[in-house]
Image (tube, rainbow, N blue to C red; front, top):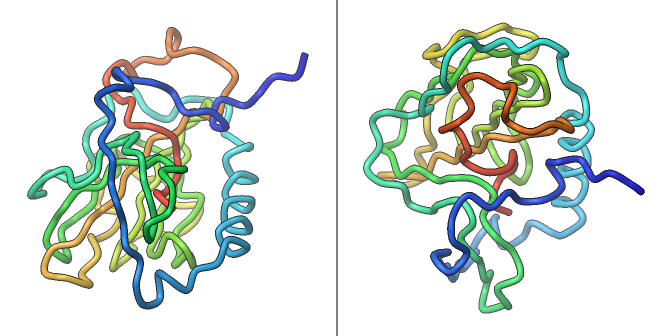
Length: 199
């Protein structure tokens, strides 16, 4: 029997009948992103997520990465249709509507494994918290950390995007290990979805 890594399948945290449906119209540069670019970026990130530090770096519950936000503009699991197409994808993160330049904080201690501008996800930071737990932050206008840096919970890691007066800040928490949550202190209330953006 072949075992699937946990990051390859969405975890259900709520009643599927409660999922929202979102119709998204991509214009400009976003409409030009091709499926091959999406595939290549995902493959690169999957290769990162398959590796993990063997020890947990966190000691307490995870906190929200953004405290000064206006609303959750897109929840985990929202079914999505792009440019009038079928509802064939779902949102694998949580988007927070926030004013441009709003501080984004590390939700727990971890090591920065990605801190760069990605083609599909924009300004991105990914933290390895150990034991296959990753958190990812996308669409950031400014990145305040560097790869290899060890960060502490509450440390600023970036600033929210600023393309519009308020802009989404995406956060996702990922589980890449082959275990359940029983042995992981602080994760009981941290299930925001899989580590990925919403493309």
